[in-house]
Image (cartoon, rainbow, N blue to C red):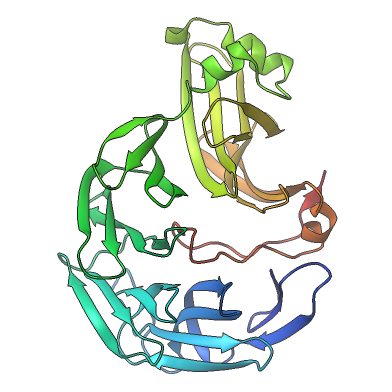
Length: 348
């Protein structure tokens, strides 16, 4: 968990009753990604040292991002390596995998290069690295223009696969299976064979067969013929035995729509509605926790323009999250783009 104090300082804790540590970010002029490494109890970040070049999209300058680690009990950031490093993840052996701008680099604990995977040219799209639950495989996103395609790379040499599958979001369902979103309902990808299959029957069919917590408006929409509706899916996460996703069911030729956050079991056979948004609000993203607490990021629209942003919190840790704390992403979850730091959310 982290909480922003000032522009250059963070409070960090492992839980609402755990010890709190204060960390300074004053030595950096830019921070692109930050993760918590559970098994090492340390933070890692890719950041630009003060006085060095920061990333600049307009100038097509990727900047000077370096990998740093920090034991929060000590509070000192140590540079791991001098080479370009973006979107780092921790590996079980104590090393790291980072995006090198045009592929991946595996580093050992001391920051020495163990192996490089060279793929194409530098792209500004977020590589969205993550480590499988068993720690054997790193998944990441390769951008080709606006297309995002899934790749997997074995931590040990031998497995390197670039799938044709286009994705919008993905997560690890288990160590051999990725769940992803692209267009229609969620799908599963077997990383050994490349075979895909649907996950669940789709939102309309879920509701028609029974969704825990479904509202009357959602049930009424689901009774319309399938060709009278559109289904959209947004953010996606897997936490423990829960599959979380945001989705929208909307009438094609009417004003009725329901935008909400949903939770499914790993087989995709049961679905629960966790929260619904007001008419002009959409789920922009969320952070789910193992106890089923969740911080939901909300965007308010006027037409197609975002005019405001807010948050709500749900679950056992709702009050704690509402006080300004936000979950810290670990190495098993991919990050998509740059995440804004939270403001004061609404507890429900």
